[in-house]
Structures are given as C-alpha cells and as structure tokens.
Length: 481
Image: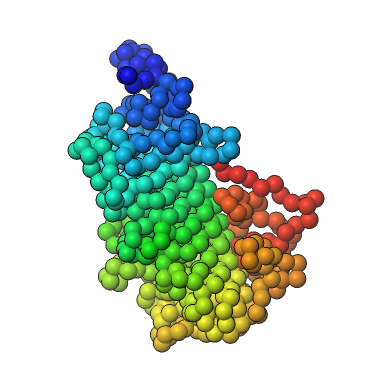
C-alpha cells in the first residue's frame, strides 16, 4: 500500500515556485501522524521540507513508531519548528523506538548510528545550523547495540555512544516533557550547540553494560539549562554518571537526580576551545535540586567539578555555586559531597541540607583538592573534612548547622519537604549578589516532573523544598507537559 502524505505538503511542493514569488514566507503547516491521520508513519513526514512555523504532531498509538529522522531546519523565535507528541487519555506518550527503525529515504545525513532523533548535520536537507526547535511529549528509546536500523547504508547497528536524542549542532533548542531511555546516552549534546533547555523530562535506564563512558545525559553547549527533570538510575551493570556535562554557561536547577556513578560530573570542555574561552565557562550554577545516592551506585562522590581529561589547563578553574539543594545518601560506607579536581576550583555553598543515613563520620565534605567555602548549611553531625589527605582548604565550618535528623516529612517515601519542627525551617541566609538577581530561588520541584512556586513567608528553609503550607494558602502545582 502506498504511504500517505499530507495533501498540504503536496500543495506546497506543487506551488512552491509560485509561493516563492508571491509571498516572502510560506505559511506554516501542521503534519499529523498516527491512526487515521494524513501520515500513518513518522517516515511519511517530509522532514527535509520543514520550515519556520511548521509543526509535526505525533499521536499516541498502541504500537511504537519504529522510526528515526534528522531535523536540519531553522525556525524563528516567533515561529519555532515543533515536534510534539499527543498522549492518550491515560497520559501515555507516543513511543519512538530505535529498534528496527527506518529512516525516510528522502533524508541523507551522517552519524545515523548516533541517535534515534538527530538535530543538525545533513546532506539532505541541506546542512544548516538548526534553530528554534522544540521537541516535547515523546517517549524515545533504544539507540544502542545490539539494536539495528535501516538507513542510507542499509541494515546498520547503533554505535555504543548512540543517544535517544543526539544534538550535533543547533541554537535555541528545547527538549520538554520527553522520556529518554534504554539507549547508550539518553541525551547527547555536542559542543557546536548553544542556548539549549532540557525541562520536565524523565531520563533513565541508559548506559552500556561494563562501561563508564555512557551516561543518562552527556552534554556540552554554550548556554544550557536543565530544569524540572527527573533523572533515574542507569541500566543495571552500567557505570556511567547521571548528568555529565562539559558546557559553558551551565545551570542545573530544580531537578530530581537519583543514582548514577556520580549524580553530577561537571568537567572540562576537552575538545572545544570556544567553550573553554567563553567567560561563562568559569561559573556553574546548581540550585534547588534533590540529589540521591543509594548503596551500590559506584563512586561515593556526589558532585565532581573541574575536569577529567588530564590536561589541567583546560579545567573549569572557576566557581561552582551550589545552594538550596537537598543531598541524601543511603550508602553504608563513605559518601563524599564534592570532588574539586585541582586547587584552582572552588565551590560556594549556602542553604543546603546534606544527610547520610549511616554514621556521620562516613560523610566527608570533599576530597583532597580545591576550596570549599561554606555559608549556612545543615550537615549530619560527625562529618569529616576528607577521607583523603587535604591539600585544599575549607572555610566557614563555623556557619554549619549540625544534627542527626534533618526532619524530612517522610524519608522512607522520599518526601524531602521539611516538618514544622525541622532544624532547617526558616534557617536560610540571604544569597550574595549577584545570585539574588541573576539566579534567585523561585520554584521547587514536585515529584515528578512538576513544579510549583516556592512559598515565600519572608524566611526560606534550607534545602530544595519548603515545609508544606496550609492547604488554603498552597500555590497550585504546575505540570510542564
């Protein structure tokens, strides 16, 4: 049976020359995919012809869509190119599965082996730097060996570093409300990307067994914001990190990040001089997050900041601003809050809660190097400066609040809001400038992939979440989908 193609696309091609001469811009087109729609399959969409303002709407169906494609087109701020899923009545997202996927024959692009969906880098459509692209509400999976697809070279296996979404290059790219899973990397962003936002996604069950080189996300960009995402565990037997990043201008805020070899691995832009020379490379912002480390999750370090290439001149050599986070470890052995790669890296920490379920002496503030400046934070009593030999320095330990119990609402069920009598209630200190103006605390994460305005009564609590307000004053929770 011949594949169905939207009559609007046919009209566009047939009248293309006429439209070119009569109008400065083609009208935006919506391509609908799914049962009973003009495009039965994703490969029926003319991806090579997308223009500013176009929308591809993919409707849920019972069977996954076995498809892969490239987006290589430019939208505008007012007319973005949108690829969006439509969930079913139970909220299930349409699934795009890389297993046995088929690339539309009209497309021709390199690095097909690197992802189910690729943004940037193509022969057909003509290569450009994609811009103002939004992808939302899709469940994208299965970009990893031993899975295969059919593309320009016929039947082909995925590479080990393939990703559910691979952004080779682009600007003003938004990934929202997606599930990225069961791939080598859930999300991979290469260094020719700038001004990207990843929000409200669920990223989990990625990685390659026996390898430390694939992660839930592996990113490098000039300007990147992660917000309101849920990061779950990697696949069993996979040693990668949860969020690994080499960006300039990185902001990680209001996320739930659970497990991984490290929760945050923020290292050097080893292959990108333009990122290393970006002034934003020296400042990284991590705030309003819940970071959870469980027993058996590999490395005992929660956050690594600096570099891992071995070329220390490339390391971030700046400041990690780490505030209003809740850090919880259920490890039976040691937990280390920070690893700062050299004495040229420093972390500025305010208003955090750091809790281990084991004896407090198992909690170290840092490894051997760097400068850790502490403002007001609550930390489990009995902590030690390091489990190593301290060559850096720690300042501000007199500012710390200490105790045995932070007063979470329900530790067993991971409700990390604070009880009324918690030692962290109303204990936050005012953030220094320019954080108050440029990166204020405005929201808090709501499990899962939701957000709400952080309640304000004049005295913020420590950690990522305020103590609950009375029902009559509670701010409405917002869904990002």
